[in-house]
Image (cartoon, rainbow, N blue to C red):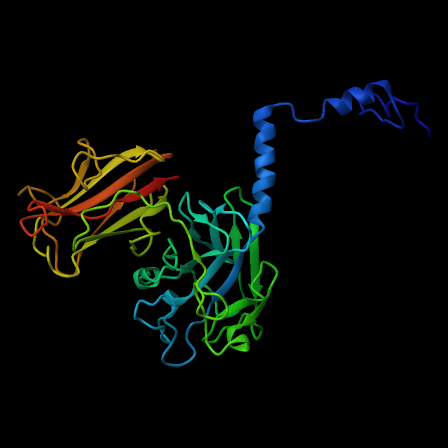
Length: 377
């Protein structure tokens, strides 16, 4: 049946336009997005998606042990063993594009679930890389000018065979993914798997197929030229720079240092705090651990040099009060405490800082750690 122009199928049905109509021009002209804010948002989303396409999974190690000694990919001095190798698993993310990309709040997952969320404000410049390790310490790795973080869930959990690695941006769009199975180039068996050539479209290949080394976490294929470093948000709240350090973990092992001092959390998560004086300078000295609340993006300025909590802070450990609950002095081997984070703090950040009090400090009064920020989601 031929319908007339502008006619209808039946009562209540939608119009059936079979040809030009005087209202068609009006309809067409009303289609463009006229809301300038929405239009800008759409343009930015399209622009961002183009930039994100240049960020890719470049190298990964799902099986760092084949025979003794295993790989020590994070350079913490503890090589992988047959019974303990998860710390040296890693995924290297590279920006192959010509513009910086903000990977803040991007996530890294495997087939079984979320493994890491990048701290808000993390930037990857052109030719820069960040390496996510399963665990351990990244202090030595980062001291070489490389950029490593530990998975904030406590592990990457990559299977030796049959698993997936998925990189998703802050809008929930998959930027890159890779699946591997038994017997293929994903079956590492004591070496990493890397893209050849190194580009967003390179083919994943066993590392020893290309070079005489087992991996190059943080480096290009030749194993000697480093990728550029990532720019981590950091709290921008340094301590006195003495022999006292703060680490935090959310439902996971603790970590600290550049790239590991800003973490995300939800109400009900378990926050673990670890304070240590590795050189023993402040062991048995009174320990103070304080927390303060601020709006995320507006960190506190503090009220004393190298103290970044305000006068309204909450004392979590108070080594100066004889009736204080908790550990009053810094223990040999470090002091660890855990707390359940409260609900209802979305959009706010908890600023944490520790201090040892006593004459051993450079200023004769206290030595403070760099502050950590826990961004509540």
